[in-house]
Image 1 (cartoon, rainbow, N blue to C red):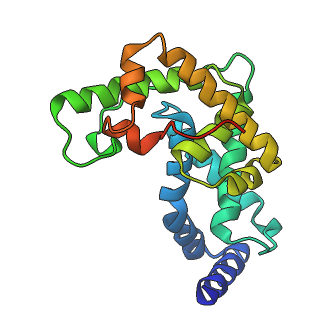
Image 2 (cartoon, rainbow, N blue to C red):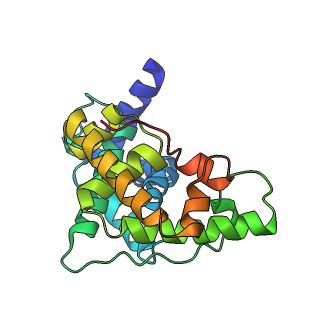
Length: 208
């Protein structure tokens, strides 16, 4: 852990001196992490490439502000979350979520054709509901429930209290459950043991 920390410090120092190789190395190390964070918040969004570039533009522009209180990866996560929040907050913005085409994007081993189709339809309907949430609620829900981060880490990333974050997650959960009650496909997708849904959202927690 200490070795990784020192390595991060040295890499950032090299980036700040304008060393192109260091800039490329930082991008290579964290590209997948940033993409995954944006993907889980926004889905298979048609603006993803632009958002990925925007996130790293923000990273490099503000890199001198990294004080090393948190790991470099965590700091980059915060930048990614801010980019996602600004995108969601644009007036009139409805997130353009495309149908999943890549089977590797669907969790679970070797799904049958029917399960794969359920996963595709379920993800599409889930993100349609997420599109109706406030940016703050969507971030809290996706970071905690889909990205698998703890409530404490989620609260830190979104700059809120754990109590407020837990409430946002719970309200988002209630909204999704209400829609699922009227949508058999979404309900089946969210059902524990249904394959993909069990690994995305375990709907079994108590209210705050």
